[in-house]
Image 1 (cartoon, rainbow, N blue to C red):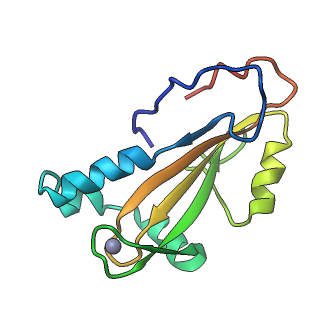
Image 2: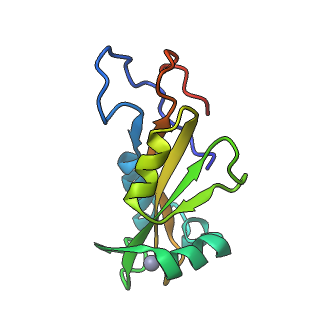
Length: 144
Ligand SMILES: [Zn+2]
């Protein structure tokens, strides 16, 4: 999770669901284009951690999206939450309801939505979302 994030989101007075959500689709597209042009090897892209693969195989939510790399399998998505009192490798989140529970807590958490190919081990971060931390006025100071 050390990919460079874009911290250029303008701070507005409006608070809605999209605040604190970062979409990584552009990075994804760039990576796939680099792969198709032969600038990035498959080994570099398809190196999902064994634990991530295990979770993806057992609990991943199926999508209709074909893997952009091997084009052999449908991608699945898994969600992880990182934050106070959670394991350093994050906690796997199975349901949307669990995500919403984190969002109600006073501490701040970060949720990651990751797509995984169970066949070739391609994995990519799709979305990052800040959860919780309500009742505090430091919404602009997003801890990385
Ligand atoms: Zn694949």
